[in-house]
Amino acid sequence: MFFARRLPSRARQVLRDPAGFAWRTLKAFRANQGLLLAGAVAYYALLSIVPLLILIVIALSHVIDQGALLTTLGRYLEWLVPGQSGAIVRELSNFLDHRGLIGWVLGITMLFFSSLAFTVLESAMSVIFLHRVVARRRHYMVSALLPYLYILSLGVGMLLVTLVAGSLTAIGQERVDFLGRSWSLHGVSGALLYLLGFSGEVFVLTSVYLVMPVGRLRVSHALIGGVTAAVLWEITRHVLVWYFATLSQVSVVYGSLTTAIVVLLSLEIAAALLLFGAQVISEYERLAREPKPA
Image (cartoon, rainbow, N blue to C red):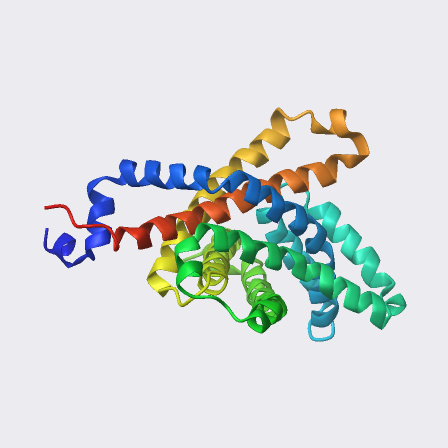
């Protein structure tokens, strides 16, 4: 009871009726055409993901080993596009083998396409956070530079994740000898890699909610959306892995287009959950402007 009294009034409202808040959020998400917005974000993300990854890998391959970078990228791409990370990594590897052919025109073109998803995502966020857009507007130069600054931040984050993942993988190859018995650290390494991936997922989602909406968002509010979207995506991701491995006949229907179709489907579901997390934050903010119950 003491802990509940120390919570903000909005949090107490949500805890008193979590089902009601969830239903309210779903209704608002539907009213904002959330699935349509997610389709637009997913389409442009499909156009953006390969040039974005190429730029990041080319830049980071000058700093760290290319093999370790591609291994880490493949491991965590599996979180975004279940079952299709291998195909994407193979294409990246083939492109890197011919990186000498990349001229400045192609480099600028890739940079442009890699920013498209961020631009469309910002527009989708403005629909969900309409109450913020009405109150204040973002300078057009900030909107123009934001995608490229975020790409730079993703590159730095990928560098750190690769270094940490390499250390954890090395730990997994060690053994501990105690009282005449030997234990492998592979399980510990696997658990730490999973926690690293999940923590990185929450961090990226929270950073999106902090940066993309107009105005300054509280870190605690962004974290609420980030954790919500991350948990929902983790559940969905495991369902997708099971579905593609056991029931799906998508390769029979689409043939050589299978990879593109599966990646687009995964991106659309991920985009829907990303926008739903934003809707959770938006509805949580709106609670403050409503009259308090007597």
